[in-house]
Image (cartoon, rainbow, N blue to C red; front, side, top):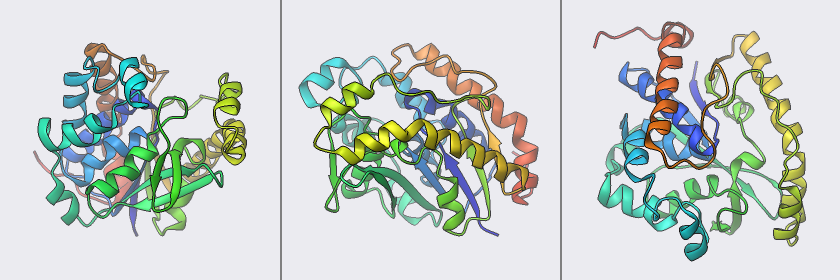
Amino acid sequence: MKSGLVMEGGAMRGLFTAGVTDVLMENGITFDGAVGVSAGACFGCNYKSHQPRRAIRYNTRFCNDKRYCSVHSLITTGDMFGAEFCYHTIPNELDLFDHETFKNEPMEFFVVATDIEKGHAVYHRCRSSEDSELEWIRASASMPLAARIVEAEGRKLLDGGITDSIPLRFMEKTGYDRNVVILTQPRNYTKKPSKSLALIKAAYRKYPELVRAYAERPKMYNDQLKYVRRSESDGRALVIAPAEKLPVGHIEHDPEVLLEVYRLGRKAANEKLEEVFAFLGQEETVN
């Protein structure tokens, strides 16, 4: 049996995921592989580097820094979340990412991005945290209209959530038999058509397949939720999700709000902890 971890995105809702994964790490739960989408990739990479609490630490520290996330950054760099600051300055200077542990940890780590020319999902395994690999994580989290197109390995890429928001099927097809799935929306959530579709059509008219994928995203997402529920009923998946809508938007500058979302993730994980151990067939360790 191969165990997997599936982490949905959702911008700052991703701190719910960070709360969940920190509890899992702190309790010694291991996975053979993990896949992250958008914020799930940005924050989830800390599982492979064995760095619990790192995501909440730097988010609360820099949430009001215009280099991290601001309209100023969007205007001056083309990215709401500043690429140089987020993917280089923070991990290499201000809150060090453990590159060596990430490279040597055997857990496979995949990220999902969207090929905007073909309009489908691309899955990339990050074997290290070198700059070329960080570009894939950045691509996975590059929201349309709020980020520049990222080019990697000859592809033009944007947010993986456009084409595969909850990549459980991918993990199952890759050979992961049992998967813990972390959602950032409540179980009863239904995605509605996007109000920004007209803007997407205008901004990305050169990429009709991206526009098509964006228009089809609500159906894709809702179908994926049904598949997750079916996998859960069949005993192939265990789901951890917020009990209700999280009190945060895509952008948040109040550290107390970020902490609350993180705490909700920790609470949800602790409530499911015994089930996770049993589901994965792992023994609980004494801290």
